[in-house]
Image (tube, rainbow over all chains, first blue to last red):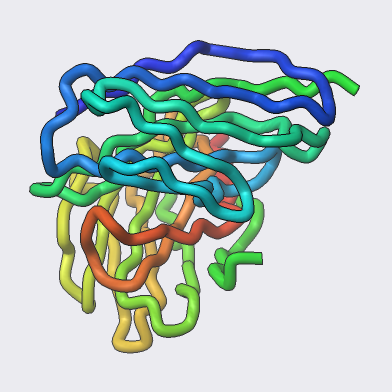
Length: 110
Length: 114
């Protein structure tokens, strides 16, 4: 199975941008990069996904390296509500199940 | 609110008992997946149902079983409960299968086995 590596935790100040990195050096050509987050006491929530090109939506941006071996989730202006565990997930084209790793716990400082 | 509802929200059972957890998918979604999340860990994939058929299973013993009904709601059954089964059980629904789909998660059922 393709794997991802994320820092265990990160801190950021409120109202500043946050860049959450993810390494996936064994990614294959058919793997999609997905991000989910889990706020305290809630189920995971979809954030964004992409294949090769950078992606933007109302929640965040996803920057994918040209060789696709790494990606960065960008929260443009963090709020206290963005404090959560962020999961970077590769979804295999042969087996589409969402397999979670340990994620990055993001702390937002007021 | 994702439109995925799970019941009950909390449950306490005794070791050796059986439990049934329920999930109502978001309207129109024909795929449901179940996850187990122990405290401080990421969710672990249990199994997925697509149009009432099991469509993949994680590394869980046969005492974990499931059903998907014609209206695409789903049940997770766990027999012979063990203390280690204490966890948050999450249900996720999506439209179809495939790597380009988005999954919507419920709030989960917190199961405590004593």
